[in-house]
Amino acid sequence: MQNESVPGEQRMTPLERTIDRAAHRILANAPQRGVRAVLVECAVFLLKQAWACVFGALLLVVIVAARLWYPDDAILARNDALTIAAVLIQIGMLAFKLESGRELWVIVLFHIAGTTMEIFKTDVGSWAYEAEGVLHIGAVPLFSGFMYAAVGSYMVRVYRLHRLRFTHYPRVWLTTIVTAAIYVNFFSHHFIVDLRWVLLALVVVLWWRTVMHFRVWRVTLRVPLLLVFAGVAVFIWIAENIATWGGAWLYPHQEGGWELVSPQKLIAWFLLMIISVVMVTWVYPPRPVDEAGTEDVSGSGAVPDPAPSA
Image 1 (cartoon, one colour):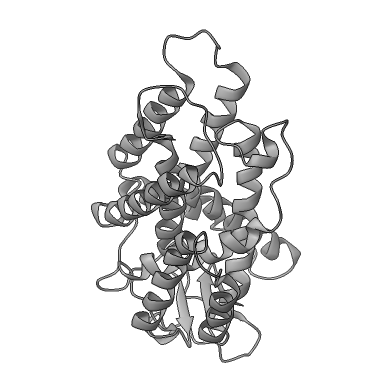
Image 2 (cartoon, rainbow, N blue to C red):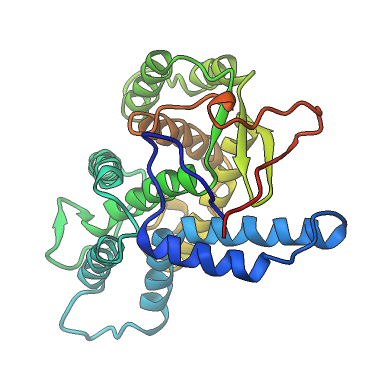
């Protein structure tokens, strides 16, 4: 699946190396051309995505399970149980070496940034949590920060699982300035003019030419980065609908009964994706394609990679 390393780049964890060797044995005789080859690449892509999402997927499973089966008369409040479960998931990620210490710093930063936003947003009434339990800050249960950490976990894991490379990536200091403005606007638009559309335009200008190259198994594909941002925002919105149905939190229009989260939230999640990507680049600086030796000379968008090692 992931075959070679670049000096100075985060390698696979021990468990991932074991899975990688097993995958290579299974795929050793897979065809290199034709429909079956395409299906193999699709299967590997989906498996890598699932592996990258393991933190968020486990957290979402816990939220849904708590909605369906957690007893109303339990001594431990449901929000506290969710917080404890989230902590155990995070400990498990580290114990099984699914995250490195370097990646943990990014995830902690996501947690802090997310919790800070949650405290403010609940105070102004943007959404609300059930008032129960003791593990909370103000009106915000502590498990909420782990939902942002789940996004951070996905970002750092997908970066190395797919060995992401970029062409025409903007300068990090420019993206950092725009990211800071996006984060501030999440707070300031409650008091002054909302600049989200201006910020959205700046994002398009900065990343319009950027192409992401991501490794599947034998091929490296390329896709406009703005399209990736939009796609991930849609998946987060879907997860948000599942989480609100599970009662993790509620928007004002859902208090009388669950309804679909407004599609307008897609803009917020798109802008949050910008923050997420830029935070990850502070740990994994964006690498150009030629550092991986996978330049596309055919113009097809599919770049054959070296034969995978056993």
